[in-house]
Length: 195
Image 1 (spheres, rainbow, N blue to C red):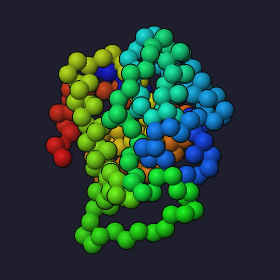
Image 2: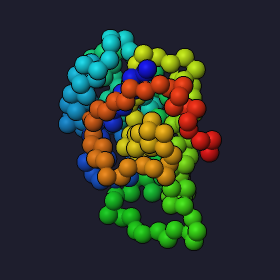
Image 3: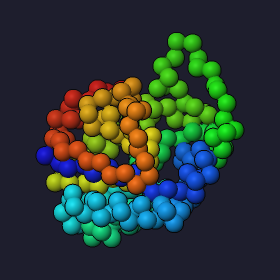
Image 4: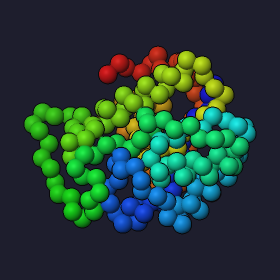
């Protein structure tokens, strides 16, 4: 069994401004975000042994969070671009109030639409699946992953044996949230479909 701990980054300046972040790289944490990251680190330290592998998106807000978590568990974050947020193309940087409804192409699966010319949830699921496949090659006792809201939602679906179509949007993934799953990585990746 492997314990997989998922952490969403602390509040960023763009969270505070209600801007679409996507894969914008250099958005930092706010003071509140740093506090949330510290609290996340304390929670993670109760869940995993010291020096547990710590993977992080290479986006600034996630990496700043991972550094705080790393201090709490005695680990240095290793960046992995597969943990980046969903790329949202020309929507990135816009205020939520500037967004408008976009028509969904007829007969399209909404989870397979690349909003703003960016990635679809299927693209994100494939990244998550690829990361889980790599971890299953030599399953660790535990691993911590610091990432972003949409990517974590897709990862949670994959950890439950689901696909990009099974994301739970009723789940509140607040800044700094810590979640974990204990599972057999070999069994999990064998059960996931090839999409």
